[in-house]
Length: 338
Image (cartoon, rainbow, N blue to C red; front, side, top):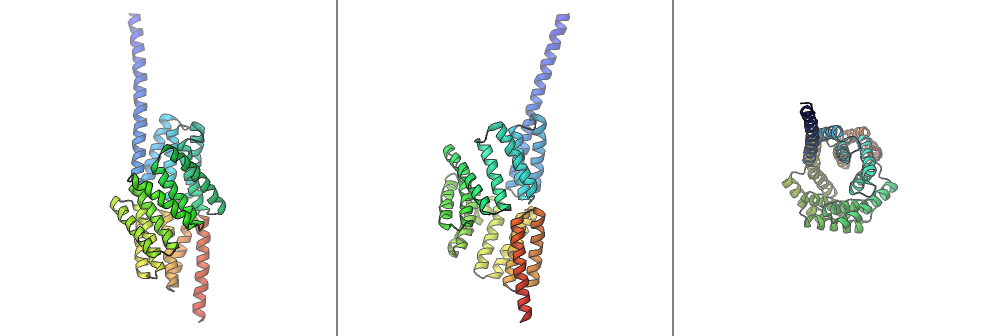
């Protein structure tokens, strides 16, 4: 009888152990599903909901797997992306750095997830800072990641990295090299029919052609990109393309059309709570109003943009807006003296 009781006891312990394993696996799977939901919400431009989903996935995976597991780092990296989209740059930087530390400890510096997170951090620092040093650091990170992506044959990452390198080249004034990067990235994105990256690259190619004053070519790229983004519902890309079309119209001195594009983009950015895009579009509206000598309205736009840039911890944008307000004040005074 004792032998039987012992065997039953062993069976019960084994059953409890297997049940705990099943529950653990279920918890991990639930965390994976919630994280995937966050990615879908973010892609659709539902940024606050995406942030909440990533936070929930992170909480589930921490309990199930421990705080140093790569899945936890993936959740933190995803959460950091949402924080960046919402303009919470200080929190985003801290989260990217934490995710990178976990990936490096668990997987090593050369692992694709470590490199992807380092790339995300470099992109954020480039946005916030914008110094020549940050451009150089970001370019080095992107080129290293691009080499690895080419070795793996990862066309999606190749196209995105080429887009990032193209933006750096354009901001440095090397428009020829920027076009080379963008064109190759577009070929890669079209080859795998990655329509989000196609529309993203078209937005950047349009912006490049505006800088080169090739307005007809810019419009061609931007309209194709906008049609594709609208078809797929990529709201962040739609906002960027509307912003660029507004800049194109402004450059052509079609002020009424420029304002329509900027206001449409601003409404969408506000709906998404995408604070960086809100800040940028307010600044563009301020510059547009200033060019039309509508100085009181220009000041309203620029002051709101400046307040938001300060809230976000965006020193590069703060400096630009302070300069714009100085130019506005000078122009306003000069008009009043006439």
